[in-house]
Amino acid sequence: RIVSAQTFEPKHAVIVQNKDEFSIPLELSTIPSPKEFRDAISSLSCEQQQFAKAFRAMQLESTLFGVLVVQTKPQLEKVLNLPYDCLSKEIKLTQDLMKLFIDYQVPSDLLAFNMADATVGGEPLAGTSAQRLEAVKSHVKAMFEVIRKSQTEETTLKSMEVDCVH
Image (cartoon, rainbow, N blue to C red; front, side):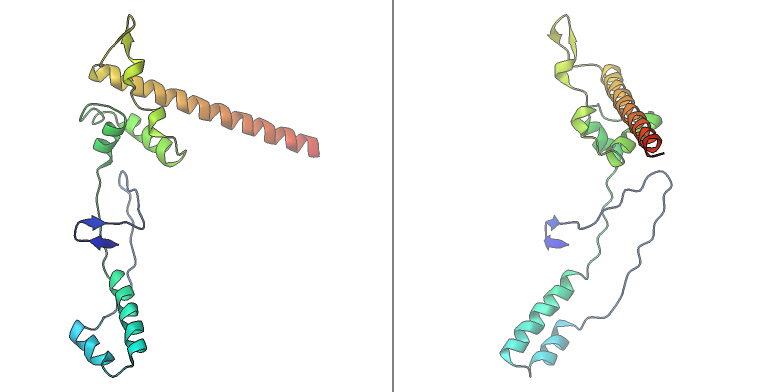
């Protein structure tokens, strides 16, 4: 939805990754021009004109279709406190991060490089690019371990429930 000349307010979003494809069916219809609309409602009563104008405003509000492309890697790097272009050669890590964010809804602060965690001899360290990347990798590995354990526990509980029923 276009709220103003400077604001785009999306109602729906799609994440497309790798070589994903999708199609969006559009329903097309012609809306009268402003002059045609004015001529058409000129003979109506005041209340009917107000209704017609409100209905037209609603129609016009949904006549625009906007597409906004946001590159996810640069945004991931910012959210995870990683240097620019740090994820460009880390395909597996990027896919794992996307899986954690999309499938498991893991908050980014659980995976991000944290300046407070990086210390040498008790002194805070800004962290080199490699150190930051390793910190994020270890967070991702730990998160997948937690998920794996949770899935194992769920499976065990379900099998116990099935055994109890029989």
